Length: 357
Image (cartoon, rainbow, N blue to C red; front, top):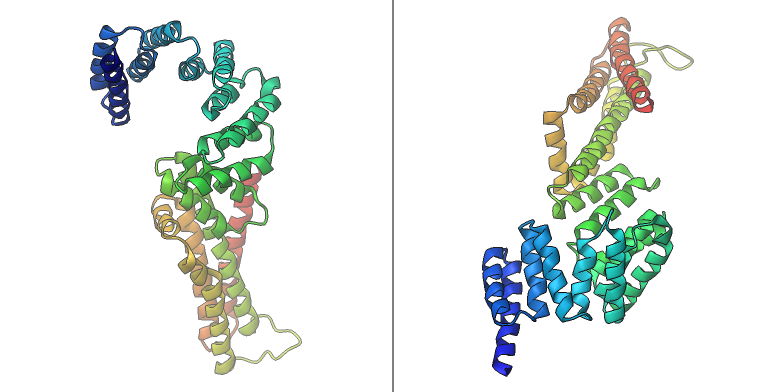
């Protein structure tokens, strides 16, 4: 009997390894042979449940759990699997009952408390109690990211932003590649009114490093990139303003004779270079590689991004021409000034109006 029990235990271990490797059919065959030898092995039945679940054989998966619990009514892992199997409407009451049984059978198992917490999704008036159950899971296993995820889940539902971020940071400290924690912190950074756009873009790029297929994160990163590209127009408009003042396009109380001295014009060009150097290029070079690559991808695929960059370039070019050329008449530089200023401001106004509607 000892040898048979050892063989059954070995079969379960091998089945676990096969399931982790994605070799479901081989695991199923191995478990079928062992269950033919000893149909009372509850552990083998739970692994068979997983095989059926992967094959989307839901009736067989439920029967496998029934068999496991028929032979081992206090087997906590079977109750945990049953709770997840029935998770969500309309079987939430079965999931809840299974979660409670799991905690009863294994009160010191954090997995049981996580299963119970997730089963308390319905009805919604259980959410505060579910959060307490999730806290118990974290108390039992503070080193488990999944326990912190249970806290995050109900903190999000209960609008407890402090717990949302703290649970994500705790999970990230345990697992630097934790996908949900990266996503949560990226979204939290985006919602922070004190966060600057490069910081927001960087957080999205970090999340995409572990969630490369997440369309929501891709869209959010593109949105941050677009807002930064739109911001370059303000740098260009500042250059236009510098050109208007330095080029003496609108005579006032100061000196208004033309042409403007070469020293003044060179100084204005240096100031424009500083505006772009510190306002855009220096910031761009400090960004993560993923964010910089997103600029190129966005410009290739998005018309409005190209328009923003084109207008920034046009405004800067007009400002440089106004300042660099020693004009003796004001008509041409004034035309360049207004051609740069008016279309860009109208586009900015149109975009803001469109975003409000």
